[in-house]
Figure 1: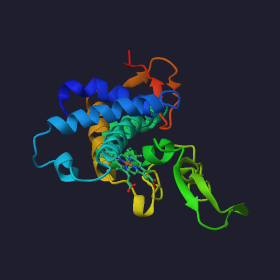
Figure 2 (figure 1 turned 120 degrees about the vertical axis):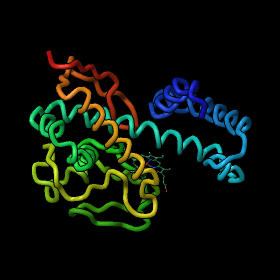
Figure 3 (figure 1 turned 60 degrees about the vertical axis):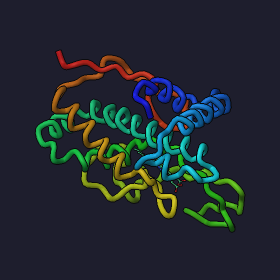
Length: 224
Ligand code: HEM
């Protein structure tokens, strides 16, 4: 993707995940991806690899959005959790070897796909004493699973060393970009804590309306 397209792609993927603008943004996103495919020189890259797929445009829109918006919000949501826990912030700044574990805990505590994933109940299923009837569409809340108090004591608290989470899903659709997202998170938090070990919140942040859990505004400043 050409670097000068960054702002356009950032806006498109954000609009695509906002309920009010989703339908209209998809048309513009698909048109952008079609242009990108048309000008692409064949090479050792994903577009060349997928060029003959019947759902190429749809898959590229999914890949770009899934790969971008989620990681952005992992960094925002994780940083917010960290700034609300100054002791943890100091301990990570002083001991960066713990950052990969902290990224896991950010994913559990406030993962970008907290709202969940869509599934089909092929038969009636009983979970926790509740019957989920056979139905064409069920939303499985990964956020609720990741805060299940029977698995994560004091689930709302940021705490390293917990059991594995399901922020990247489970089974055949397990996130194809999980490894990349973890690396991006580790680099972002490592760099941020190295350069600004004492950031503080400058204003109460606002959550945005989106299918991906994330912040609309988030102001921070170095500690005075
Ligand atoms: C913090 C970052 C991320 C989170 C929390 C996340 C979360 C998830 C989850 C929960 C699923 C499963 C969806 C389902 O079961 O229906 C998924 C699938 C997927 N993710 Fe991610 N993801 C992240 C980053 C990425 C990145 C960096 C990429 C690509 C570069 C990516 C590409 C995909 C794709 C293509 C799928 C669909 C896989 C399939 O249906 O087989 N994701 N992701």
